[in-house]
Length: 360
Image (tube, rainbow, N blue to C red; front, top):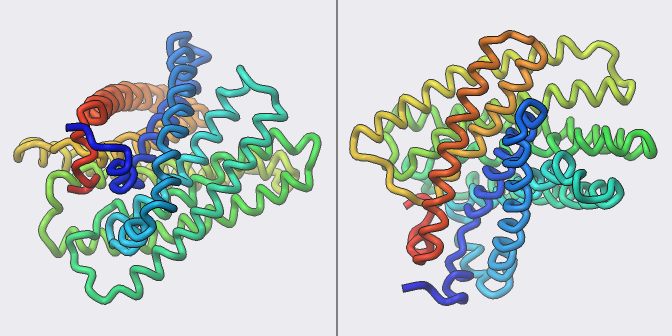
């Protein structure tokens, strides 16, 4: 039985915006391949419009819940696991903004795209910072957090802070020619948020790994959360290389090679992370399978970010084997996105997806 609108709003999970992150991430990957493949460019454009529709549709119950069921919002914000999913909304804003700056320029005027990009960037960074502070206060002040809710989904807060420069870097290049002062301000904010996200990643990842080593493994439905580990690695690589380029464009740096060298070192850890999470996923599949929930979208964006990072590293180093690796990641990303999107669509149409929490 399909739930009524009021029930959908009351039980609406903030994790829904992970679908916007994943779809937007795949759109950007395909757009990067668009110069070599007309099919990839068409796919990027289709996903751009799909992602815009998804964002608008999801925003309606999201904002309604804040006013109609604020008590449930508060309960989710205080939950040691569910609270981590609130950052998918500001991250969705940022990723949708990158879609507009990259793909939307084929359909809209530069003035409109820059204005919308600034709006989405501002909303994204304000919510990212607010939720990062609120989430840490919640964790510190809660006295009875056991090992069960601790998993790599906790890394979503660092991810969204590192995501901020992805849109900011594009805005700097677009705005610098006619407003260099604003471009430098955006750049300074981007560097600040990169620092917030990177240090949070180092702190929180150590807590999560400690929990996974000392306690039993999470339930199968939480398998996709392992893939969030790829998020800070992938986004961190792309954002840092972008920050280097924008610093050079603004005249702040003259030689960006050392920074890009550090970014490639970070990307190198991604090989270990990708192999690890793949092995753990196979382990869960062989042990009985992974039930479908909204948490499956955690497979998508981290992999998209790591794929973008791999393509960026290839463009810089021009090592053929890295390109082959990147194309294999693209294929895997497309397959997992198609599977997750279809399952999400079916679950939405029959109402089953609204009956379960993303982590259940």
